[in-house]
Length: 306
Length: 306
Image 1 (tube, rainbow over the protein chains, first blue to last red):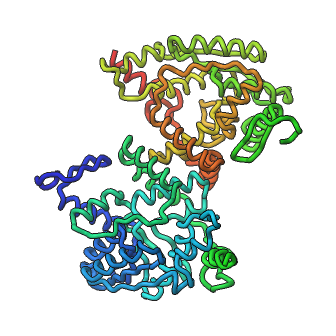
Image 2: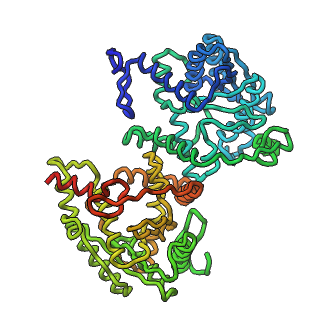
Image 3: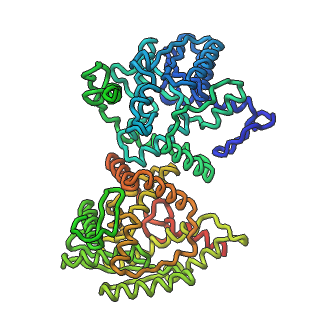
């Protein structure tokens, strides 16, 4: 209770009781502190915000538009990738259009179709056998290609930095998944800020200390309209198990999500960032960790099936 | 299938099908490799084996007795702590007595009563309020005091090293619990071998790469009798949740337990073992991480309640 008004939110992890407006202020202050603590943005940054129209990215764009008013030399550009998912992406594009109009933020788009010659629907169809089985999950194809598409948009926008909307829950889940899979490289690479690599616009995560449920509450209290339909390809069973477990442990011991993220941060800070070998893809000339980049590897696999 | 005999065990994490005797050999070879990889034991070590009579420690004593035959200069001593748990410990002491007789291993015992003036039953009774609630779980009191009691026995036995029976499941659970609780210090201290600290006999964990269920199978195939009754104070709800989760993920992706332990090992190897400040307890003169050791802190708390 900060202001004497009726409390609307209780935070078990801190014991705070907050009214709607103190809660809104608190979320924005947390995001501001995250940005400054990790030096995510500069007063004159040209910031590309990856916006899908879902709750996280829509809230991110709203908050950054609000914070950015204090920095007249900084600029925001919303960027959106149309993966080509029938009956899903069209609706969300309408919401993004409405959001950027309301916030008066310039908007750049591209699509899998124009970049890779196929929509995600087409890629999934080709990659699946007659039983609908695939070697990789839909999220793997989509993730690899969207990453490239976002970078392409950020370069096109002349952005210094890309802000993505990963929240505290996403981060805690990813950290635990990397432990469970014994993936040391991904565990160590997942840092709040990453050093610059030629050809990649650096990415930052201003929402990494905001729990998912507080993002939903923030949107609700601030009448922010977002796309609620879940993606039709959403079948990340492994992540769903990890999410359910972390949520249970958070109930048992509030603060668990913050503890996971903090112990991970302390660990990676004790280990100097390894030189991430970045070569150039022999096929497309984009940055690659091996001889051929992940995008070309996936596309070739799909094209070979045609 | 190594020998042509009928398979009795399938290991999903490696794809192996093994008959009883190949399985036994494989478990023993794994333990041998663990010991040599981490230099846990020397050919002339005087090894105190902490034996409670449960499945893990009974199997450990059997395997070490078998391996030790090749090293005539090494010696085994079984050590057992009687915590004073009515209707539980007496039965297991009988099993340990039978085991050490069968294996012809010398046996040293002590008890909470003689060391600390109270049995665990008495400590728990005093530490609980009229509703049976306590500030700390029974396992916390027992763990701190048993650790001291084991060290006392090891010193008494003139041992170079204490072998404890923590298995792969125990290790994976502890690693994940330290992540969930954000406990960086415990995460980093939990190493297969620990540097020497004056007053502490170093501890090693030869079973850290053996899954719990293989320990049960090893005991079954080799007709090893152990104490099966669970401890009446067993109420580690937090660890039970973590255990259930890891077991589910192991089913989804066999090898998960090994991956957790290996990624942890790689991480701690990238971080030099911090100087663990060990002072001397102002009260009892034993090694302590603060001014007063954990044993004296807990006992004082209990005595103040009397």
